[in-house]
Image 1 (cartoon, rainbow, N blue to C red):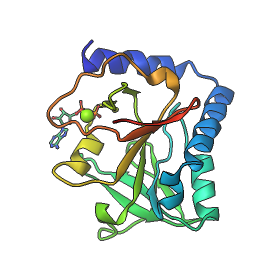
Image 2: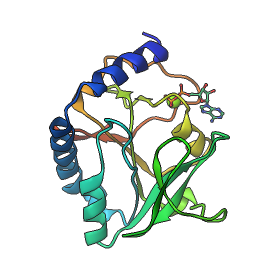
Image 3: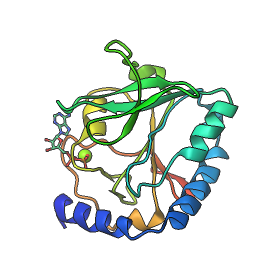
Image 4: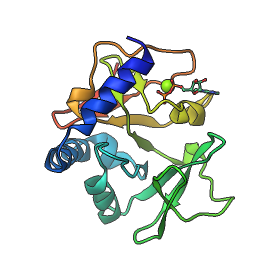
Amino acid sequence: MSKFSLRKQLKSDRLGLSSSEIDDASLQAATHLLKTDLYQSSQSIALYLAFKNEIHCSKLIEQCFLDNKSCYLPVIKSNEEAFFVHYQENQKLIKSEFGIFEPEHSEDDVTDIEEIDLIITPLVGFDSRGHRLGMGAGFYDRVFQNKKHPFLCGLAYSSQEVEEVPVDDWDVNLDGVATEKEFKIFT
Ligand code: ADP
Ligand code: MG
């Protein structure tokens, strides 16, 4: 199936989830991830604020603050550029032109990817080899292109796993995924 059709199908499936299904899965996936050495040994963690029915990071963000980790959130610009900015507890969030909340920031608040130890990414679909299907703008592919990047962990419903995600030259693979069922590393 093409990326386009797969994305359409998976996005439509996700719209059928109830808010308690979303919250339960988000909490369970966070619980699996929080137990890992990966989380515990990461001091700087990039997360995201969920959009529509994406599995969310609320529990993870809360725990990162309790554990005194440094948190980062993505900022996406209309020229398709994306970068991460530092996010502090109680920092004011503003709604971007895409309807996604992001921390208030200035032009030079761009964080160097090398400062981050772990990046938690949303996704539309994934497969058993760590191929990632995103929303279709290639944001994460662009941020990481030609760069040595930190561990990239997808946060997903297990129902988002498909037989095979088509891969293009520019696609950046996931290193692992946390779902409501388990945390696993792709080898
Ligand atoms: P997603 O990763 O969100 O599923 P795709 O992998 O289909 O989306 O990529 C979407 C678009 O982003 C593609 O049309 C591609 O041309 C563009 N893109 C991806 N990575 C890069 C990059 N490194 N440089 C320029 N354009 C890119
Ligand atoms: Mg891609």
